[in-house]
Length: 336
Image (cartoon, rainbow, N blue to C red):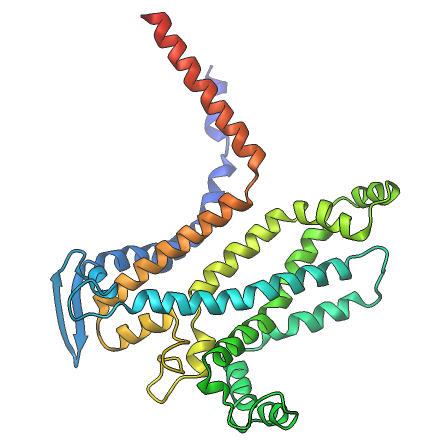
């Protein structure tokens, strides 16, 4: 017995050292993610101002939310207007992005085409996402200004009228911002989709080809269904980034004051509105907009998870829950 106790004492539990390796991540996550999130919810309930070095704070309950939605008299509900701007520019970027990325992924991984030098194509496609948003915004603003080279060329060709200005056109400004976002991020999406296509078993395509399935049928019946997990990831991450869109609109078509997207505030995003409120010292209202943005992102993400998730797994889980419920009811009836 004594020998057994000694052996137990001398046994080293290596598993506990794993917690030391993952501890830094949780510490950083708690400091830079959880604490700011909790503090944002906290400050959204306060009438909190910081101006000229002075600070004023008093509990306001849900008053900040009433203010941002324009329910309070004298307040204008900018939130829904800016949310609409943000979603329009995100959708205008994402739909062509996912279509082009799917086509490029199918083309670059097609065993029939057997394209040579795919590595070079991947590098070229991915390069725009490496460029900083500030430099891209300044470049496109110079190219598409009223007397920019591309604008003047389109006018000379008769495509645009002589007095057309992208910066004073709502559709033109939103379209250019959407195009910049598409051009910057379609390469990243293509690489993700290529990795998903390469993970599909090639024997499925071989069997489909033997059965006489065309390339289109293979794409819609094999590639797309098996790409659902990757597509779900792309949709959710793109939605989160799109709803929080800030850098390109804030640098592309804003006046000297900044954070007011032209023309007529039609390219101002939710993140730009938050920064505007924060710069004006209205911390409580800015926090309320952040909380609203958090719930918008959560709802959109859950919607994508529900629509893109595995329906068979959900049906099986539902059937299992109904079985358990029926079993519990039967047991209760037996006890009685």
